[in-house]
Image (cartoon, rainbow, N blue to C red; front, side, top):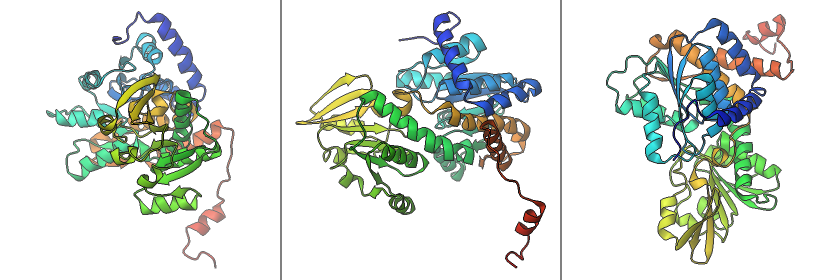
Length: 418
């Protein structure tokens, strides 16, 4: 078992630094924020405990926060998503506390979460709300916390449940719900990186395959559209009538999972819910069906149920495990964990640029406003969302029209059309 990273990991850290710099070139908005942060030091004297995927893109966010004057403690939000060279570089070259090792077991995963909580943070940053929920279980009057941010859909759902029940003890900004996050990160990032992880793990040809996409939120849309573009016949399963209707209007087949299970070659879950692919579905699947998950937690595929009914299992290659059901074989990828971060490198840096720009600016916002905020889940302020979109367009060399004074006057008048 590998230990936490220290100053001795020179060669590993060098590899990580080169890759961090490579990602940083595709993150111009975050780079511009880092430039201003290094001068203004808006987070000076504040401690941040972050539970995020330890990737090159996350590293650029951590470096940006460090330049803003923050002290940082970072752990992984998924046992298989850590890039070890990146973790080593953050420790050695930037003095950031990192508690994350790719492949860590569940016990060590939660030990690492406890390490970042023990940092006694002013701000928490989550991807799945594991740090926030753990803090709440051992609250003991943590008065230092000003607020937190949440990166992903699953985490926001958990936090809204906490708010609704009156259990949320400090304000949290739902970064996931920013337009410059979910419309791009979730759709284009998840769409591309999910297929990247599946192809790296299996080297399968998507063209001509029947692919079943469970969930038609922004992530599901992205995967479905990308898979269709690569020649797959895509079936969508849903529990929401409006999303099911939208999938039909977008040109996809829609049916219940129990029907799709009989004809699918490849299944991908992106719902944030439990047992979306269950024992009844495994029993209907054809020989050599491949099952993967791109939702945050490894609960969407009922692997425990699959193990109960299988007659034999074995590892075929990295991230591919075969389960025998009589004469039929079912292949589960990456233990049912996030396929795009387990078997690949996660979302492209250019979309994470906007997501992490939101994280950085929201951390600054919490420092300024935190004591005045209620214990609620807040949206990203519109001015932050709009500013990031403007900066991204500028970085891409794209200009858009501006309203004239006459147009502004017209839009603000109740006499439109006369």
